[in-house]
Amino acid sequence: MSNLAMKHSTYDLSIYAANQMEDRYIELSFPTPFLSDFTKYSYANYIDKSYPLAISRQESRFNYSVIAFDGGVGLMQLMPPTAAYIAKKSGSKNCYRQSADCNIKFGSWYLGSLYSKFNKDLIYATAAYNAGPGRARRWQDKLGKLDNPVQIELIPIQITRDYVQKVLSNKAVYDSVFAQKNTVDLLSYIDKISKNHYLNQIDDDNADINR
Image (cartoon, rainbow, N blue to C red):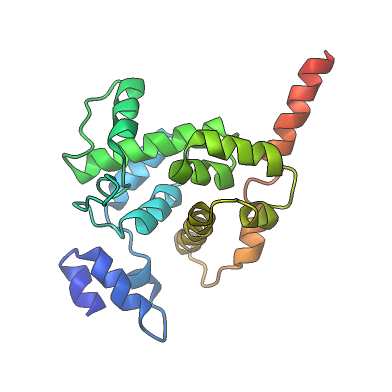
């Protein structure tokens, strides 16, 4: 069933069916549709291609036509106000509803913006994609000195906490796939991501103040 769904580009069903198997098939459970678009736009926005792939797997299971009950649209589940903001800031036509390519373009731009805004911290860039930059900034200010796994566990909104865990798990698998590795040490991966970026920013800020 998973293979059949994959052949018909019904990726959400393919992933669902693959996840029911006792033995996991990574190529079915973690497909890479639209890879050329994800690669192109992630490169343009200075993020790993595994990042928007991880977001899309969590948000839509790669169903490019889905519209969620809360208004999220397409592969990367962009909200209309967010898409309008992206179009304005990036100087692009607001085309996020019109094609998978544009949805990936807009979503990758937004991810790149958040990644930069949060000083290349995947935890809070991902939290911001789900819960908004304001909340994520408050959490980063409060939790940013702690170990990464602890930071994630202390995100106060359960939906966002689960979202961050799942997206980063997705990204770890995709990074492993692209590196042609057979295993993923998730705890080690989580512990190393974004390490010291926030603390280095604090040190830089303090140095500026001391000058």
